[in-house]
Length: 143
Image (tube, rainbow, N blue to C red; front, side, top):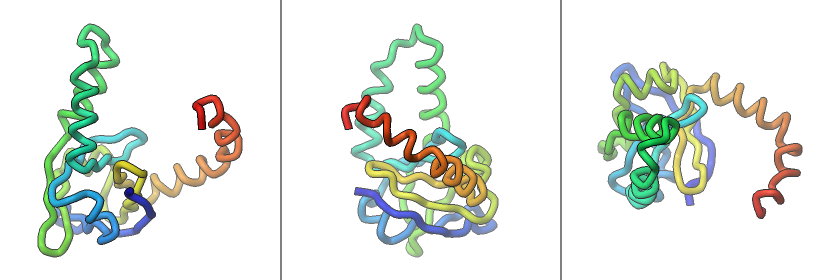
């Protein structure tokens, strides 16, 4: 399980260190793609393959399905860590997540998310303000 919140910096070449506690859960190779809420999603290969299967099953006749498939696949890259535990994020992914320098890397159960520091702090603050209200509706989802 991928858990925790970590701060790291993107260097001038676009490299980002993946925290050691998350590396084991991600495995030797993993996929990074454009995520929702202006962040990047990082999937272990097994999770990516399961998501890929579901996305391929979406009907091409639905515009929203085509849009989601395009977003996830067009931005996706397969990564592996260098000797220092870093990945190289290409400019298109850094731009999507507004990553310039400071980043948060968070574990979200079956994936990792990479956020620009300011964007994550704003999102966290807004989410915390409505956390109890959102939690009250979890029973509607069977939780």
